[in-house]
Image (cartoon, rainbow, N blue to C red):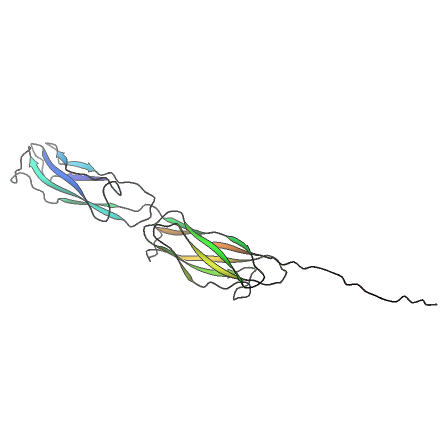
Amino acid sequence: MTFTVSSDRVASEDITVVANTVSLSAQGGGVDFADVIGQTLTIAAGSQSTTLTVNVDADVLVEDDETFEVVLSDPKFDGNTDASRVTIADGTGVGTIVNDGATLVTVDNTTFAEGNSGTTTFTFNVSLSRVASQDITVVAKTLGVTATGGGVDFDDVTNQLVTITAGTLSSTVTVDVIGELIVENDETFEIKLTDAKYKGVTDTSRVIIDDDTGVGTIVNDDTASISISDSNGHARCYR
């Protein structure tokens, strides 16, 4: 990141200032940027500007934009402090490190046997492609495909808020599937994700739903057994 240090007039001798970085929401020390400590900047005689470069550390964290300052001090003309020839009018420059990527939300598929009684818990993983510095939320609901909700084949999930906590990559949604003894085809339902938010706010520069549908497959685990009974009878003779 480059800052320009300028003079409003040309000077016949070199002008120097001392630059230091100061952390605001961004952290120095190589966390978000490399510190500049006591660096002398020279505006050469006959020119009106010079530059200062601050190295910003790249990362894959999805986060807020962050800021730090470059603060100027100790102006000198020809190596001497001389307020009649050089002063600092604006000694603070703000550097803004802009977040440069969104995390992608996906939900996986899951398959289990339904069970013969009670309920079986189907667990769907909701995952991020990148860690975020703030909580990510989505809203989940179930939709019947060949399986029927409302407690027939599974219990509905209706607008459930799912939170992927800051610093983690996944959370889960669970659906209770109803066990029974009917021999039937495998059945499916869906988990649908909507309304992705970063820190409680819709922000497509930071979070996007990439795969909004997880398919739950309820595997039939019942078998019909066919049998035929014995039979006794009398033979008759007819003329």
